[in-house]
Image (cartoon, rainbow, N blue to C red; front, side, top):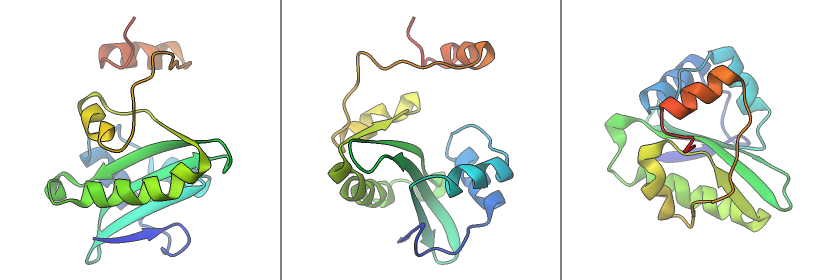
Length: 144
């Protein structure tokens, strides 16, 4: 996989990126809002197999103490080939010098992230709209 960053990748096809994220098991995203989120992120990664976008991730960072990692996805058709490890190793190399890295993981990927120095927090919390919190409870993200 050729792994490009925000600095060396032409602007992606936002519809293709939205489809990749949805296929990867994350919530469906509006391509325009997705473009806004990626443009405002400190770091972005795009993985290509030929001309096909098969992987992505982005992070927001203060470049001092903490970063928030989001939208880590490998196309399901390309999982199990080491691309996730390639992406996570590059993310770790980039972000860990800037302190703690936080991630909000889908439930079935927690064990995967433990392979890359992530540990479960006992004090992590979230604030959102009542509808969003209800959805998160139903999906198993909120324990109480």
